[in-house]
Image (tube, rainbow, N blue to C red; front, side, top):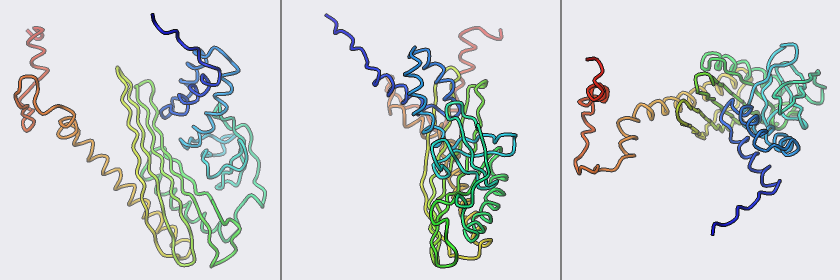
Length: 301
C-alpha cells in the first residue's frame, strides 16, 4: 500500500518558494516569480515569499536600477543600504527608495550632510571612483560600478582608519537566445595609517537553457595590499591591483574552458568503454559524427 502524501504546511511552501527565488539565475527571478504565483495559488503566501526573497536576491546579485527621471543609476548592494528599501548613491549624493519586488526606484531625495562622508574621506572616495569608472568602461561592456564608504566615514585626517567597498557588476541577459549571465566583484579596501589592505571576491554566473539546462557558478577570493599615499596615487594603485586580479581570473576561466574538450570531458568518461578499447583522445579529429549521420540517413545523395 502506497504511503499517503504529506501535505506541506504554508510555512514549508513559503520556504520552498523563497529558495527558488533566491537561487534564480541572473536576470530570471521575475520569470520564476510569475510561475510561482501560479503554483502557489495563494496571494498571501506569494507576497510573503517575494517580500523576503527579492531584497536578498537584489543585493546579492548587485542589480542596477535606473534613477527617477533617468538621472543616473544606482546599484543595490549591502554596502550602500541605509534603511529598509533605502540606498545611497554617492556619486550623485542621493538617497533612493526602491520597490524590491518590482525592481524599480520609486523615489529619490538629496542626501543629508550626516549621511555623507567627511570631506577627507570623500576626497579618497571620489579619486578611487573616477579610476574604477575608467577601468570598468574599458573592461566591461555595459558594466556599472561604485565606491561606498563602509566604515570610518567621519575620519577627519591622516592617522584615521576608514574602509571602502568597490562594487563592479556587469550583466548580459538574452532570454530570447536562451542565455543569461553576470559578473560581480566586490573589493573591500581598509585604509590604515601606513598601508592599505585589499580583499576581493569575484563571482561569475551563466545560464544556458536552449534544449537543456547548463549553469556556471564560479567564484574566487583574493588578497593584496599597497602603501598609503595621496588620494590620486592611492586610487591608481588600487585600480591597477583590481585590474590585475580580475584579468588573471578571466584568463584562468578562459584556459579552463579551452581545455574542456581535451581534458574535462575526457575525465568525465570511464577509462574503458563497453568495447574494452581505449578511445583515441589524442586524435579525435579522425572521427566525424556528421559524416556518419549523413551516411546512415542517406543525406546528400
